[in-house]
Length: 303
Image 1: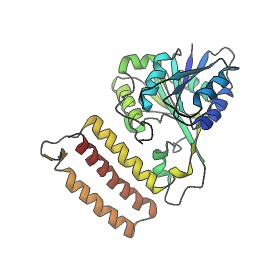
Image 2: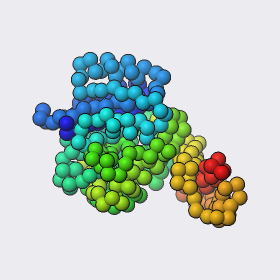
Image 3: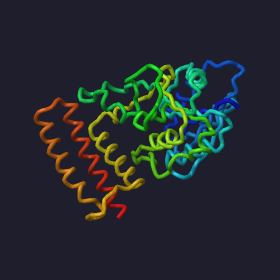
Image 4: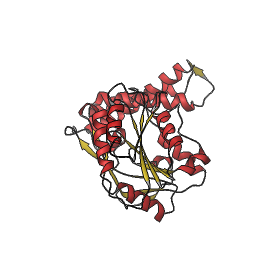
């Protein structure tokens, strides 16, 4: 089999219905051999019933259940059962364009890439507030800054899981997703995609961004609030530091001494920013403070 599309889902049955519809609308050569794997990560809604109904007249669709909570656990389950040589990842709130599968496979073949990412356009449920400029799009798994093809050369350029593909053989070389990272149920966290691509690049494998590999990501109104962004930054930073730790021997409550003056400087910059800077810059400085709060909370919990 040439390709497996893996969609991990958690309590988003009606949104998943639209994702399945977009995947079913893929315009592919009849010679292309592919499948769609839905990994249900402990949903309590009607996800299973929905997928089984869709399977009744679309044999390409498969249902899998992963009881260990966490997006990385669900993705690893999908990888383990997939039959395709190339694994494409997207989410249950994403609508791929009709040529997404063929464009992604053609781009990987053109550049002899082992992994790739692509363009992610937003579908705003409500208009974004004035402070939410493109500098914050990464919090929402939106990627629109470039529409050309270019090599991915650092983990900072890693794609988002809403539009990403990796050859299955790569996981044999570098390992699976780090299950200590990533979203778990309602706990917001990330970093698993970047960490995977860090290993991919360190292994000397080729990764590329494909500007014409395109999906559309639904962004709910509740995510367009400062409260959501603060929570995302705090929980993500907490998750990352619990996974990889932080250097420094002199500590109090397991927090290195040098973190405290950095935190205080960030607080000062935040206060000054709210007094003098445009709204997006002022809020960006506030987000840095929540990054430090997440670090300190994670280190304290791991003491």
